[in-house]
Amino acid sequence: MATFASEKRAVGDCDRCGFTRPLKTLRAITIRMKKVNLRVCPECWEADHPQYKLGTFKIEDPQALQNPRPALNNDRTLIPNTQLPRISDARSVNGAALNVNLIG
Picture 1 (cartoon, rainbow, N blue to C red):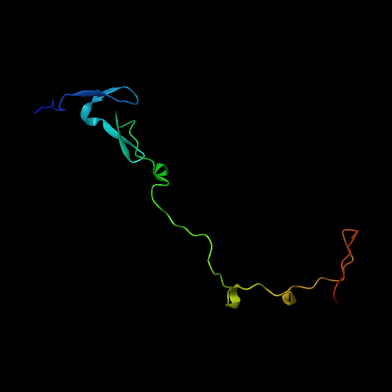
Picture 2: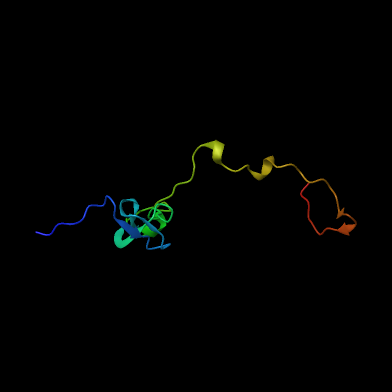
């Protein structure tokens, strides 16, 4: 059986910046939820970005209702035209004639 040297005095190079650091301080990088064979120093290390995980998990987010129904409460209905303020008998706005038939 093979034995390995201890990491007590071992040094290694950062795969991103190239600086020599103690081997036990180098961390493995995870890209798209897979560990790759890269070891980087704490300054170069970054966590796997959540945006890389898009499409991995199934998400159902329906945007429309299948059988929509109108609102029955009066608080959410529109104001009928009979309650709107009446337009006065103005025949022109800023000197321009209007072709509007007003109901008196």
